Length: 108
Image 1 (spheres, rainbow, N blue to C red):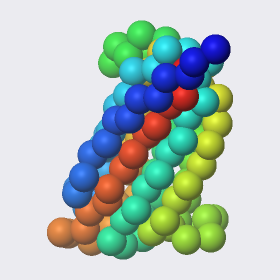
Image 2: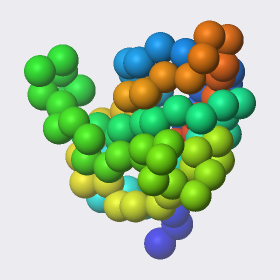
Image 3: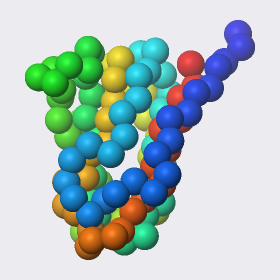
């Protein structure tokens, strides 16, 4: 079986304010890799949704609190996503002018 890979990327995403910074549509049951390479410490949450509609998100399916991860400027995680949509939100912002390169890769 041939696997396909897709990538959703946001370069220089503003992490100086809380809120959504990246959203990706998945095929469901996809192996997902999340990479965040930031210029400063911030905290993030990974939310999932079956539809992507505003009121249909399960918030903080996974969290990456700056105080709890080894390197809050270099976050790497891999998991299986069963939902059709995933998004990354900044939950504790960095200082003004700070940014991150955020990538969601999927193997399906």
